[in-house]
Image 1 (cartoon, rainbow, N blue to C red):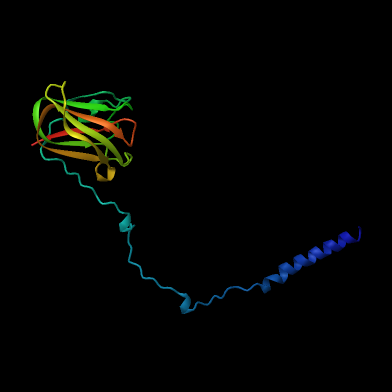
Image 2 (cartoon, rainbow, N blue to C red):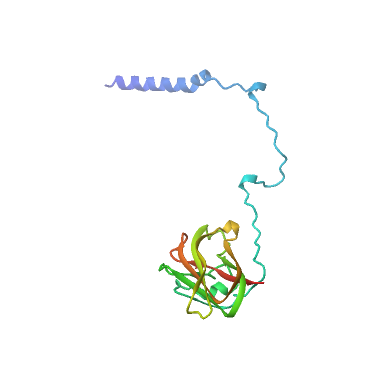
Length: 207
């Protein structure tokens, strides 16, 4: 044992000396010469500022309101239910951003009714959510009823799915011929974005 140990130490030292002093010479470095067939030249446009690929750009949406005046602005609104602080009166305050919206409880159908104070003619209804991107795309199934006395309602528009997309203003516009009523009621029966109906602005237009 006394002889084997020194022999092993000597062998290890010899291997290390070889690796340090001689082995690197056996490693071939890649050629530093460049040949034309290995070079690819690409022409690029002159760029002086940050640029975005056209396919990644969203088309700019321009909001076009229905013709006439919003006669529902500041009018009284009632709902069959509302969640937390999201009361129905916020749908006619003229503000469509922040926490200014109504949300019904998950107890469909949700009813939202505006009182125009007297019988009025109208030709369009605009329903809007906040246009902010955080309000993701969703669909809501909504019907429209009208009444002269607030007690008896008749259908004006059957239940239909409306898409609310922040890239397209997060709105839906409904148009009518010679509609007339004092009370206009929305009936929500589905919302893919929440448990109850949601609306930031309930607008009614009169020419």
